[in-house]
Image 1: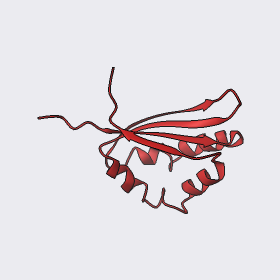
Image 2: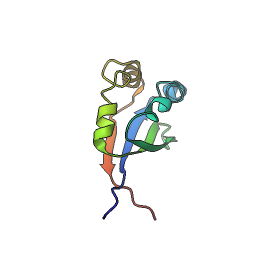
Image 3: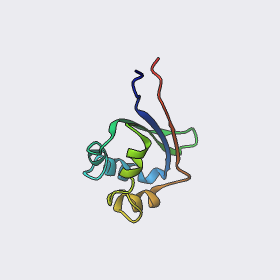
Image 4: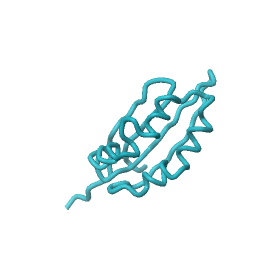
Length: 108
């Protein structure tokens, strides 16, 4: 029997440079990754903020979930839904289009 692998989500979120500290504080708050880690279906996460040659900043986030459906349910919780403090902050701090990709990660 084949083992079901976790689904990997990769996200790019361009951030206005002046809001990197605000964003990092939000991620480390009770409504940030602490909340994410408690969600049904959550497996793991890694993130970083990059700086491009032109000085622009971007969040890179890798999360593993038991399924994309688990993530979708999480994004409908009051803490993540449209109009939430989290969503409103990201709307204000974003510097471009958010990209989200799904797949199954392979280990080398």
